[in-house]
Amino acid sequence: MSDAMKSVVFAFAMCLVCGLLLTAASNSFSGLQKKNILLDRRKNILKAAGILDSAKKYTPKAIESLYAGNITIVGVAPDGRIVTGREALAPGGRVLPLYLYADEMGRVREYIIPIESNGLWGKIYGYLALESDGATIAGFTVYKHSETPGLGGEIEKAWFDRNFLGKKIVDQAGNFVSVKIAKGKAKQAVGKDRLVNYVDGISGATLTGSFLTKGLKRVLSEYEPVSLAFRENRLRCRITGDVPACGSTGGSDR
Image 1: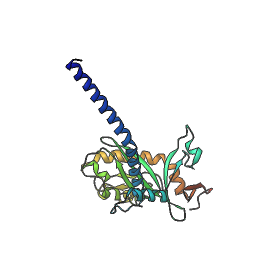
Image 2: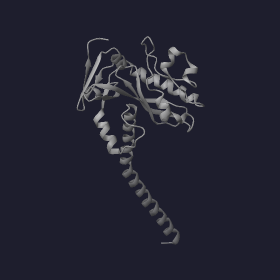
Image 3: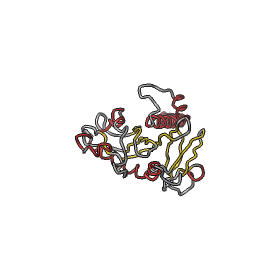
Image 4: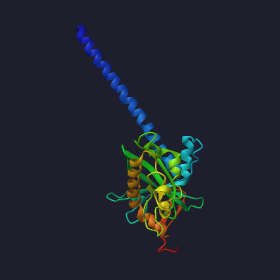
């Protein structure tokens, strides 16, 4: 075999070995990567629900324990019914995921909605928690985005998330209006009667705020049937262990 041919064979063998090693490494790390992604999402669900203390650091085991002990995932049908089991998994159904946070007695304190919105440079993903009154925001968090660091990227910061606490997705008459991000300080941008539906914007990131406002309204509109059922006290849920029991009360008693 000539020297030139030996060089070709050696190069081919090296490429083959390196390719096999890279494939093996990719496959071995893919499981760990998926596990870390799931853990990060669960951590953000807990943050939105106010279960995690932002000043503390939690081990993966602690996060998993808190999630298992406090959060139950169910489905929401287009008419606002809570569905589980086979109905939630039925093919062709338009069931939305919903995370329930129950107290020690199994009564739902909050429900957490996954948020997916367009941003200036890509998708924005997060979670928004609502109290069981179906109107008051209990928490908000962003776990993935492509916005500019120091500008639109501030949507992932704790100061921005805190803006949402106590805000309403309904107006003073009880009509759904979603929650909006103001251009600058909300107190200076809107009237006092609408302040409860606005959060402070981010300086220099008006477009990010505009995109997120539209995204929040679209997602919350999809979940409006179940939010309305909570608001009108037509939906009662109780969690026993990790088994949800949700049904209609037959009418409003508020």
